Length: 444
Image (cartoon, rainbow, N blue to C red; front, top):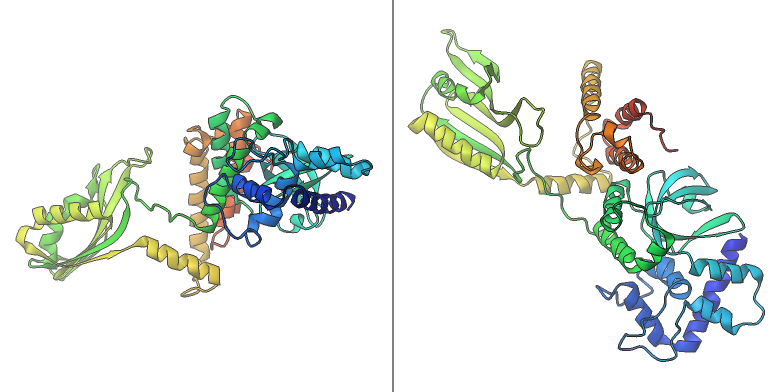
């Protein structure tokens, strides 16, 4: 309470001092500098960052650029808080200490490691590795382990608080991106506090990039395992031959390494095939080297008709060529339908945001749940020895050998758990299994 009281008194006093001493031109210059002169909002008070970040940065961190076209000779050459202290006689020890400490406390990206609701947060600086215990009654009710935020921390007499915090909580999926940003600058070491000061502009640019993406997400690039953009395509053919004849001509498409991938075969009284579902397959997989084969599409064969489902324009064209070659004039394309998966994804996101669904998901039978659990366990066991790009192309077991690898691994597992929230099947048990296998403690 004493620290928050000091913060309130100091910011109000320093804002008044800045306006009376240098006026609106300095504030305008600071606002443009804060946004790094890019996409600067015109309406200051309505901008989310104005109250939460800018005002405290203005009086407790900003130093005007003397080379700016609008710069004046009387503008401050140090943070406004220190300029004000130099003009004052009697200032309380707490307020003086708060100003001096705050001016030495640069902005950084911090991840929540532990939450004590309505009391405190344990934070770790992603850039420097330094840990903070901050007393935050309000923020501790909103933030969760693995959340990130851009903020500054002031610590006095072993008590710390956040100040100048970003108005948006950054979700865990951005953690490895922030680590990547740090490592592009400092590959072999963590950053120092001086580095934070030196890269203040770049850190704010990083925040603005993330905030813009949070407010207006870039649609995901959906692709199949060959890296081709998804286009869910259905080709419908009229057959001018029997289903049995068409099956014999197409069967080679469903065979790989001696195995036939055919289901739902039906026969007539003479034994001739009347319907079948063929999985069009090829050996191996471009992205997943451990896969035995890749399903390129599904061919549904019945009397008088062939329906082909593929998931990309390239596969659709290839399917047309294969069918023309194998069935010649015995199959005539009568319909082609393409669904844009981004539209379906947008509808799903809208339903999730509004809390509505087209239908309630059916409950999974216990037998199927057991099979799913077994398959998931096998997947995660194999994943422990799979090279992962987000881990620097190391396996999770290899990542555990270094502090930097463990940092990335923890961030990735937190992302898995958060991304799975709201789905019918939670990934919590799977990630708990991974943590147990690797000897990692779950954040609380």
